Every structure is written in C-alpha cells, then in structure tokens.
Image 1 (spheres, rainbow over the protein chains, first blue to last red):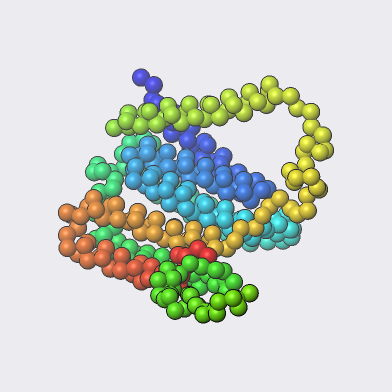
Image 2 (spheres, chains in turn cyan, blue):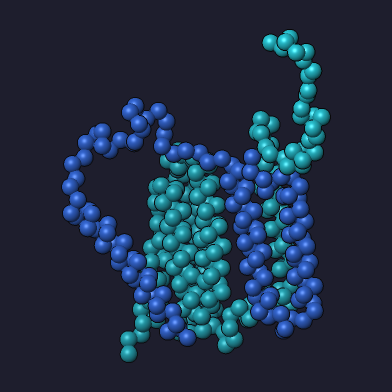
Length: 198
Length: 118
C-alpha cells in the first residue's frame, strides 16, 4: 500500500517552501504576488490533507480570490521601482538580522514545546472541522469575533475615505430625474403663423 | 474520507502535466528566430511611447477591498450555520451583532456612492 497521502504532503510542502522563498527572492513584484498565490494554494492542499476542508476553502476563496488580487492591484497601482527601493537596504541589515533572529528563536521554542508533530495527514479533530470551528468561535472566542467585525468596518470605511473621489464631469443616468420630467419642461410649442415660419 | 479527494488529485496532476507538455512542446518544436522588431512591445505601427505597465485606477482597489470585507463576512456565516444548534441563542445574538456592525459599513458605502461605478 503506497502512502499516497504522505507523498502528496511532502510534494505540497516542498512546493510551498520553494514558492514562499520565491515570494521574497524574485525581482518582479507581479511574479512575487503570483508565487504568493501558489503558496496559498499548496497550504490549502495541506489543510485538505488534515481534513480541514473549510479552512482550505477559505484559503482558496478569501486569500487567493481576494487578498492576493488586492496585492496585485497595489503592485499595479503603485508601479514601485523595487530596484530603487532595494538600494541602501544593506544598511538595515543589523536590524533585520536582529528581528529575524528573534522570530527564529521563537519558532524553535514553539517547535520544541510540542511533544511531537504527530502524523502529517491525520485529522486534527474528531468532529467535522467546520463544526469544531463554529463551536469555539462563537463561544470561547466571542470577543475576538466581534472585534473582527469592527476591524472589517474600519477597513471598509478607511478604504472609502481614502480612495473615493467623485468625478464632477461624469454624466450619469438618474432614473428619478427622468421620471420626474414633465411635458412642460421638455416640449415647447410655438404658434407660427401660416407662411411666416422660415 | 481522504479517498474522496483522489479525483481532485488526478485532476491537478493532469492539469499540471498538460501545462508542462504544452509549454515544453512549443518550446522544443517551435521555430525561434528572434530579432529586435519581433521582441519589441506591440504598438500598431510606431515605437512604444510609454512603459508597458499601465497604472490601474484606484477605484478597482476600493471594489476589491469591499469584496474582501463581504467575503470574510460570508465566510464567518458558514461555521455559524453548521454549529447553530450547539451555540444556542447567544450565538444567534452574536452573529446578528456582527452582521449589524458590517451593515453600518454597508450603509455608509451605499450612502457615499462607493458601490456605484461612474
């Protein structure tokens, strides 16, 4: 019996790591965003292997369908010259190394705290994953859930305030104006004497 | 359970393989005689006047942001609906509050005309 699930796991994991590395190493920002999409997709595959189909679907729909598209929009809108930005980046190397080192130490501590990672393709919870999320999200994590809605509200209003510009010169169809128009406003009748109209 | 996803795996493998076959076949079998004119950007007749990267209008970004927000709102509804019997009346009230807060944003967007395309 070939362990198909394990093979798929290692395949997806390898693609994920390579794609994630390419996100930060590629020179073209558009390619970078597309590698990010690949990273999300392979991560969704890993979720499916853990029987977390809901998370996989969310990753595909929200992250790939919306967030990655947003990144692409930003890249296309700003037209940033990344070669220009990278110039002088070496001077920030000490700070970057310090932050990266701290994160690395944290990751090692978390990895050591786990007794074992367990089988890579076994279900993480016994009940269906959507049900498991629903049971804790709306009871234990009630407050973060409600705060999430406020964060979304801030994001929405902020985006509208920052980007919405009315164009004064745009002609638009306003149906109520059209319907409110009466015969008197639209038609003018002139009585022209016979033979004098020219 | 995981066996149900085997067709998806097969589909992915076929799609990936087909993509590689098509690219490789055209790379190997195609005739490549590039010259400066062939490799330039396409503009009808004259030399390119601008860079090929066009800047998007910022309003696409606004639409995308609004899409993300309502996408996430809809995503939160799924586990709520599945776990509805377990979380009781409190869960119902919570979700109504969640929806109300986002409804405020929706009303704001509507009132401001952010959903209209000029």
